[in-house]
Length: 202
Image 1 (cartoon, rainbow, N blue to C red):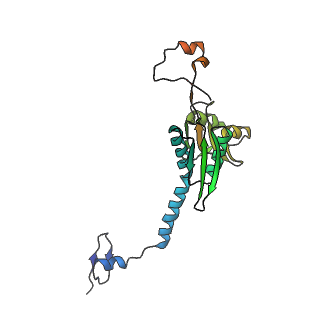
Image 2: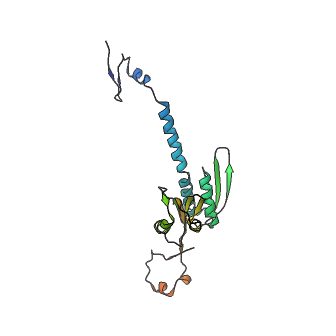
Image 3: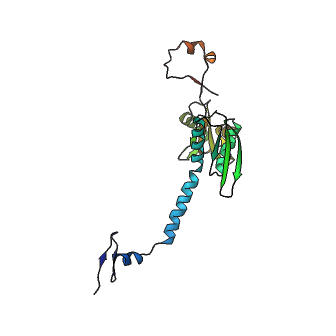
């Protein structure tokens, strides 16, 4: 006689069963599919490295810290920070290799209000650059968009000079409160609500 046993997960065994544990022991797990899931998870972690680093920088700036530790990091993070350093939004940084993965100690200047990644990373043509700046940045005179192009990773100003497009990686900008002595006579006469601010480019 052949007995059929209905397991909890809906798998029916076609041979004589000796109990529920025996059913699960005979089930074959595909090592190939398991490895695929692990590989997919690794790629997802690597894609979030830049996002996590930029979030850590923003949180440290809001907390008023002078330094922030970024870990883990990759080449994209390093190139992104060099662009921010070139524009004087962040200070010097040191790359430390502790044999468990590189980390960065970054000096903050208190000039950064917001930075982050842009997802999805779709292609931007030269004629679409102005529209993307209006969409991502508070103003065309405030902040920068970082792109990955055929010439490497650069900000939108350099991409326009080289007349090339690319994929958008992220953005960063600073918004400062305008001192009263820098406002025009017309702006000074405007009735401003106590919660409203007038902003100027850094």
